[in-house]
Length: 211
Ligand SMILES: Nc1ncnc2c1ncn2[C@@H]1O[C@H](COP(=O)(O)OP(=O)(O)OP(=O)(O)O)[C@@H](O)[C@H]1O
Ligand SMILES: Nc1ccn([C@@H]2O[C@H](COP(=O)(O)O)[C@@H](O)[C@H]2O)c(=O)n1
Figure 1: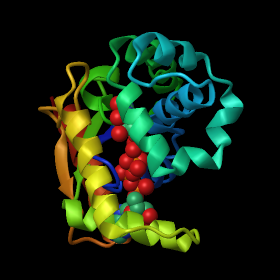
Figure 2: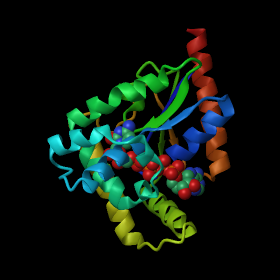
Figure 3: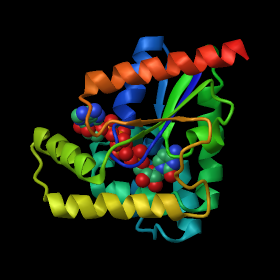
């Protein structure tokens, strides 16, 4: 079974995708990490994230980079959203994502274009969202839990800028697939959101089975 989970920054899609993977016994890929690795790699090489050539060159990053804690920084997230707008970068990362989805038994992938571009044939699709205020508050709490300081207004502006770039780019923009279920977790605690996600996936799979 292939499950596609998309949504805007800090919506909780990664938390839900990991929980779905555990529930159904499937491997999980956080595709945002790949774009973050490209962004960080460009910066480390002294390149320009807005330059498609520099960004493409960074797609050959060493996989060890995927464990680098700097990938979690909002600065890296901003670079990721700049490099991810290049069609060349998206094409370079596509085969890896599709191969992950195609493994025997299936997989759960989360990102921005999983249900629309990477695996439009997915067995179940969710579009996870939450209000901008809730998302900024959750990210702030996460940073504080890691001993980091952050300013709510700055964080809100950074998340909004990222969403804006991701939604309005020409290549594989962030959008809800026509056949995805929308899951707004603004008013839900994590366990309630996960329960709802499982119920939606089960219902989608059942609907497909009856077709
Ligand atoms: N329903 C929820 N209620 C409260 N906190 C939540 C909920 N869902 C996720 N969180 C918390 O919000 C933060 C962001 O969640 P998560 O990392 O899953 O989002 P994301 O959409 O994958 O983010 P990114 O776009 O940066 O990859 C985490 O600290 C997570 O524990
Ligand atoms: N399928 C995807 C996944 C991510 N991106 C871009 O990477 C940025 C960081 O992603 P996170 O999920 O870690 O927040 C994101 O803002 C997107 O620009 C993407 O384009 N496609």
